Image 1: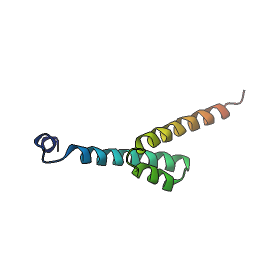
Image 2: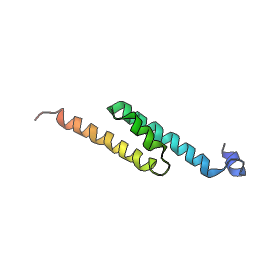
Image 3: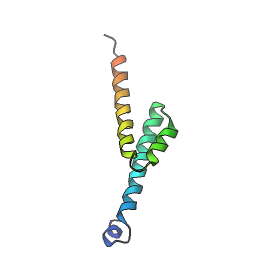
Length: 77
C-alpha cells in the first residue's frame, strides 16, 4: 500500500480520509458501547468528514471524565 501511495497509483487524500473515518468510527463506537452512550450519535459524528476528529476527542474526554467520576464516588472518605 505504501508503494502504491509513493507511485501515485493510490491517491493520498481519499486514503487518509478513509483511514481517518475508520479510526474515528472505531473509537467512538468503543466508548459508546462501554459507557452506554448513543450509538447512532457516535456513528453520525464519525461519518462527518471534518467534525469526526473533534468528536472523537470529545468521546475520549467523556470516557476520562466518566472514569474520574466513578473513581471519586467509589471511595467514601
